[in-house]
Image 1: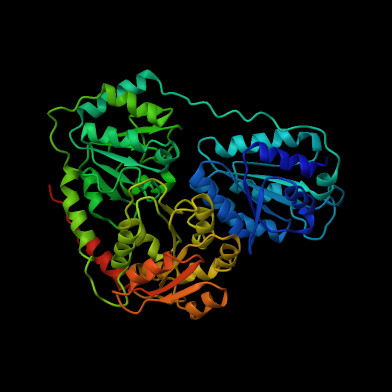
Image 2: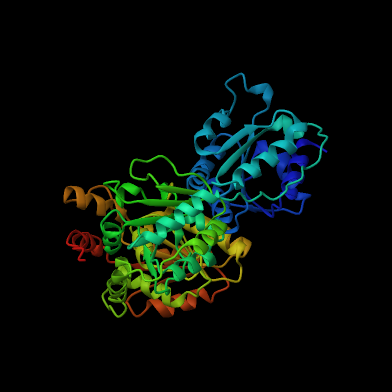
Length: 545
């Protein structure tokens, strides 16, 4: 047995079923070992796509997605997806090939110090230099990647070490033990919640990672406290629930900001500051905050909790609920906002304008997708509209990259989503800019049998940047480009291609596309004049008590 074979045995022991990546000269021994294993290797068309697939796999399963590249340019291509997983809290293990240790002291072909390079974008990374250390390194990698807050780790394997004889066996991978919050903090949180008149729950992705959706819904319902989620906290409470005030996180003011203006207590549950800076909802640092999470609060002048409840989120909520008393309390002010938020959402239900307004497009997308179906959003102007208007019944049914916010994630992410949930409908929602960054992975999707729909919000430019330029300077520059014929491009790859030519076209086209047994692409012109209209509307927003 060589080191590469021991490495793959250790990955099998960790429950790895898939590795996403590209073959290369320096990972040949690893590929040969995978061939003899139970692991399926999914060959991608770009290392960035492989990393994004592992990223989304980790976010959907809670288990580390694994990606593989060769050295040099293969490893640098991998980095964007690795960084995205690290900032978004998705467990990921990246493995890179490397020159032999006998060539590292000279200027060798394609050699880079990958351990140094990956250090800023991982929780931990190392190089295997002794074959016998492989089981310890793999076990530490997976334990680190999956511990709160989850993230990315990196293992570098020189080609001569990969080929060396190895003696060893995988280490026991016992499940991580839960930790529980201190009684004093639970009691203090319950007292503060019982006394508040206008409390508001702010929930983030940590609550989804903790599988706390059911207890959080019970907690909010029994205490009659409205719930706001971040972009990455969608679905933690069903969007149809009377206490659900949907999503916050836009840079402009929105209806929900009125709730934060008038709250006397924010209960932050599984909330990570990277999801939406507290300076945007607590600029004066005067809102009392209860922090309920698996980890202590980060230091931020606008986020200084009066109580920190650190431990298993579900257990903490159960314990706080049993000690809180809100009978006779007035209806929280924030609930008055629900009717306005709902009316704004429904306003576009029957809009017939063309190109289609983003609000209408997303409204119709919601009507077609089932409660368990998945939307993967790319990054761009459409992401802002999906965040605001695509609402969820279940956790992890709308995935938005919002820590690193990397363009190009939607199509590779949809491949991973379909691998994890082959019986669910999956839509990759992307702008034309993001589409062209990783559209090559549609060939991967076709080859591995993961049919999903790619919905292109087509505006012929980088719409989000243009929106920001218009807001700041009153004009835009360098943001427009040309596009290929997306329908013909899809068809040339053996996919199905569709073009939307009226507002009434979209729903029947989407239903047809979702029924295909191959990936499908829908080209839909979008009216981004709504961007500036929303900016004007948010500027005129007046909070009334």
